[in-house]
Image 1: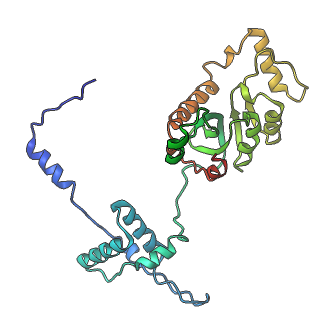
Image 2: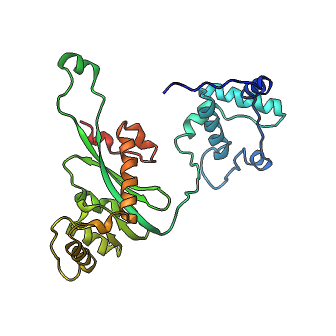
Length: 287
């Protein structure tokens, strides 16, 4: 499809909009000015901190937004304070570099408390990035290296609650208990596909008092009486001859949505970060 072209008729407004893109406005609240310097604590040993965590986080934010070095952002903020005629000083670049490791930035998570509906599924990730010397000398590997990404998502907010990265030989049922134990929030209902129709998964849900919405596998048999909900699903499957009961339900819709999000993340490992997942164990599982 050819790129669409639009004829610009309001050149005066268009030129002003382009000029305003370079305008810069800074405004400091009175409470921020008062909290710029940290209050000295006489009870603690050592030299008290001069600047508050608000000042350090502000410097780091401006450094990130304008893509400046620590020395450059120090001069930038000092010049802004001079123009605004404020009796403030920017923290020294060495102070910012030292305290950036320990500064705590508070943020409010949008979701807390009980999870009404939790969707669990997994997808495969192809590992790229062989070294140039290895590819030049020996060529590319013929066998692909895969990893498995297990996700647990809140169906209401689409927030990734838990995530786990494993080898490709780890089954979904084996990784299921780890996804349940990663959060201490109460869960009402957990949805998954037929790969999780195992005693291990159902026992874990019963131990946590979570209602299971897992379709039974084809030609599934009855279990003991303590698995009453699962036996009812098996009876419905035998009565209808298929798992058509689950098609069109909230379970199928949520699992398909989760798979679409996982497929988008398959193209590149950086796409996983868009889901809010920090793969801290990726270095251990890298080939």
